[in-house]
Length: 187
Length: 268
Image 1: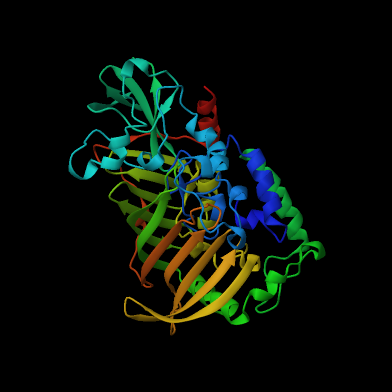
Image 2: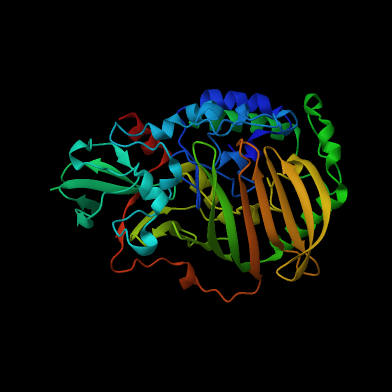
């Protein structure tokens, strides 16, 4: 997925078109500072290029600079990014209804349970997506990007769990982003 | 994604047979006839030479510390760019040790590679994960990328001057002019590779390190940018212990969700 593995003087657009067709359920790449979960961001290395942070974006949908309309409508919600949202589907549909990652600014944050001071991110919390709002609706096996308040880490059988008001989660790294899988009570 | 990897890898494999990655300086790489583009002539030999000089110097460094002030755009669904600042610190001993720290107001991560395993530590939330790693930095970068979906920012530092550094993929390259970065005299160059435009400011003198990099991602309609201003220590005193991860008392171990397990979760 790197430029090294890709363009090789072939027509890039052709390959990208093929890529979009094949990567609908792609797992997003996650650079250190990049959003996981299909977030959009600038590539952080030339080597990886679009194979990194931007792997699943609608590259083919982006007009060449020379032909791009002078006034691209970027205010119309998702209309200008239809391709992008399709391509991002794989990541954002991880969840079984209990979360909505409609805005990805919240998903690259160390949202622990200390929401004071530097750990409080108004943008992230303001949209509130990606947090298990109601533990009773958490479906076992689903994955969330941040925990509700008042959780503690507990280790059972050598496995780390996060326990939040009766609900159990197993943290993991998805890329460099910590995500939480809803699990059954471990003991 | 897997399918795409395989497909593109196959394409690359075929391409490599035709086009040797390492072209001699100022010699256009051999290309498949059908893929010849006029853009090849748009790489100014002086710009290519500057890149090669920088690469050759980076390759001579057996150890270095590099601290970068980074500004990078994240893009919301509705196309708004949000600029996120961070500091990224490299400590490197070739061929098989590094730590890479990223610190922003939103996220803190430290990646360790001690020659045998990788550790990704999130100190603010006390989680770390570990996995076995191959014996070289470059192979480890590929494992991180391919198996764990982790990409190392500015990994070009490990790639320039090495086989597969994409030098022959340049479609544009030219000299912009002299510039001072933090008071240091540099020369600014601009390049295009695939779907990224990028610029590098190379220090003048006998230590031609990159002092600044800007990468513009053309694959996204909003053209998000990654910008890093870099400070170098090319003679650091690093020891093995600097690359060994010792979990703090309150840290607990978690797993890497590999691409495979993430995909499995996604289907549930």
